[in-house]
Length: 137
Image (tube, rainbow, N blue to C red; front, side, top):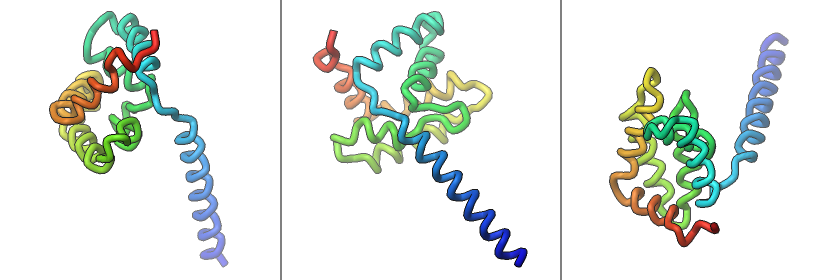
């Protein structure tokens, strides 16, 4: 009888956790270049133009970063899904996230992981995404 209760409790906890994570995931929306520019300006002002702090502020506002786990590789890959290399991009982001992880210096972690991930093809995609032709002014 105790085993059955334990099993019911475990399944209930699992279902609750799934419902909470599904709701949290469904709230996030793909950012547009316009959203990025607007949030970037706010972050520049908040961080007094300091690059690493500005970057971390921006990616937090866009829902691409948490101080606990760093960059959300899946969300970043969704932004660039049109390049048909989601798995490869997720691997690069996750690698750079782990390589540069430093929970005592979060701004530096965000900046160095970004620099690592954008040192290759992904960097070109970011520049293309942020090109002025995509921004409605």
